[in-house]
Image (cartoon, rainbow, N blue to C red; front, side, top):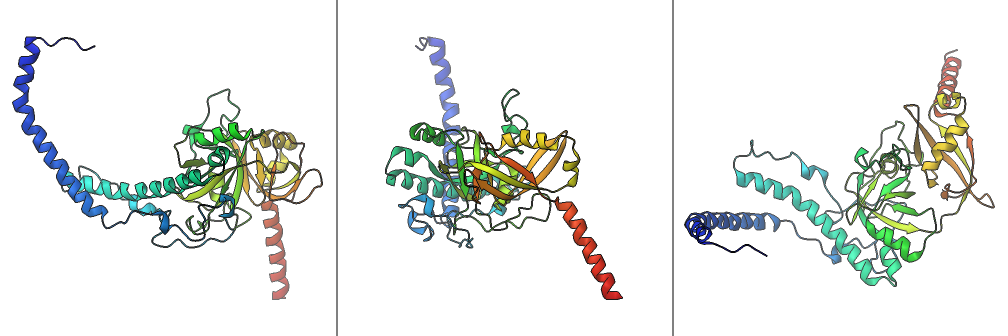
Length: 365
């Protein structure tokens, strides 16, 4: 309940009214002028519609049919393609010629991202409208991806603490948590991140370093959930997962809850450095660090941390239980999986260099 207005309050309000009215009129005029300039600027960029979506993707059909191993170059009218160069250089109010120029530059940089978010929202809205059940409508989203950083690190005492980049956990939106509850999915809860043909930007050419994946055409990765508190239509992935899929920040991918991943029985890992095998209890270290991965994907390069040093491993072979068939993805959480090491990558490089030296020596003779 508001306090009663006394005579002093009335008189002060009446005194301020003549002063405030001109200011309010000037602010309104400035807002109208700004909107007029913004309208002229945005008219050059057509808003995306559902009819402009790539023909390779069927919105009304099951989203599981929309991915492919091949990457198509996005066309200029692809509403899912975001140009990161549109965000630079950052405008500064101090260096801008006028406040209006500063605001128009901010508008021009915010507009492409707003169009991208609207295109993703429209796609997800149509999927929800055409889904046969509530659980199906919640278990899939087209998402804009961004990399995880230390701000997502859970507090001390939580299992994934200090393992944001050395695990397969991603931050997802709340609808996936509701999908788990509706579908009664069993632990571990796994999610598939997939590149979408004609939608995801062309693959980033990753340099030959420790992150370089063994499979250059990897189109999907399976992992677990770190939390379910990221904004709608977004997903945050660990660095190794983004590099394995060749993704840039704000690329668009498909994310879906999967319940058909087979349990793993055996995995072969190739260390990048032979120094890991020199650790006295390296097998026990491996078993401990693998607990931070809910599933493994063939062809990926996964990191482990041990005593302040980061080690990298290529997943070169993956077998499912109980028949031992070679599979592309397999669960490792709550599974009795046998891990085996193959020859380290740096040792293979030494052997290759030695063979090349002997060959050149024989040719010179």
